[in-house]
Amino acid sequence: SDQKFAAKTIIITGAGGNFGRAGCIHFAKLGARIAAMDNNDSALLETLREVNAAVDGEAPVIQTYICDVTDPKSVQETVEKISNDFGEINMLWNNAGYQGQIKPTLEYDPVDFARVMNINVTGMFIVLQSVAKEMASQKKADGDTTVSHPFSIVNTASVAALRGTPAMVAYSSSKAAILAMTVSSAKDLAPHGIRVNSISPALIGPGFMWTRQNELHAASGSPYFSSDPEQVAQAKVGGVPMKRLGSIDEVIKSVAYLLSDDSSYTTGTNLVVDGG
Ligand code: NAD
Image (cartoon, rainbow, N blue to C red):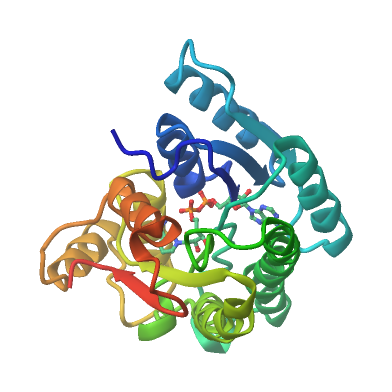
C-alpha cells in the first residue's frame, strides 16, 4: 500500500471547505495525522465527523483547530499547539481562501478587494511563516535525514492568477501574489529543508460551488458571460481542451504529489490542474 503519508502530520487550512475536507479524508485514509484548521467551527465539525466515519474503527487521526488565518497571534498559538499535540509537523496544505465579489472592475468594492488580499495573501503568508518556523526548528533538532528536504508546503493558487478571470479582479490579483510568494519563499526556505510549491486548479465540479459560480458570473453584468447560468457553464467547459470539469479527487492527487517525496527535487513551481 501507499506509505508516503503513513504517520506524517499534515496541517490543512480551509479544512471545513470543499477541497480541504476532501483532503482531510484522503490523507487520513492513507494513515496521515491531520491537523484541520478553519475559522468556521460548524464546517470544521462536519469535517471531523466525515473523517472519523471514513476511518471507522481505526485510532483517531484528526484534531481540529478553530483559527483565523489573518490573525498572526492566533496562528502562532495554533501552530505551537499542533506541534505539541502531534510532536512534529511534516507537511502543510495552505489552502484557506475567499473568492470575494463577482463584479467587473468598475464596480468592484475596494473594501472587499482588501479583504480578499488579506485572507488569500497575508493570511496565506502568516500560516506559511509560522509553520515554516516550526519546520526549520525541527530540522535543526533532527540533524541529517535521508531526504535532503523532508518538509513540504503546498499553497492553493488558481488559474485565475494566470488568466485574469473577468469579474474577479481581487481574486485573480491575490492568486497571482500567491505564485510569487511560492517562488520567493521556496528560495528562502530551501536552506531549511523545506520545499514550497503551488497548485492552480481551474474548473472543478460538479457540485454547489460550480453551480453557484456560474450563477454569480451570469448575474455579474460582465459582457464575457451570458446572463444564463446554463450557457455560462457550457461556454466554460467548451473552452477546455479536455471538454470536461476536473474532480476534487484530481486536485487532491496533484496536492499529494507535491506534498510527498515523489516531488523531492521540485520546489518553487506551480502545477496547473486545468484539463489543458
Ligand atoms: P471553500 O469556500 O469550500 O473553502 C474555503 C475554506 O476556507 C472555508 O471552509 C472557509 O471557512 C475557510 N476560510 C476562509 N477564510 C478563512 C480565514 N480567514 N481563516 C481560516 N479559514 C478561512 O472553497 P474551496 O473550493 O474548497 O477552495 C479551497 C481553495 O481552492 C481556495 O483557496 C480557493 O480559492 C481555491 N480554488 C478553488 C477552486 C474551485 O473550483 N473550487 C478553483 C481554484 C482554486
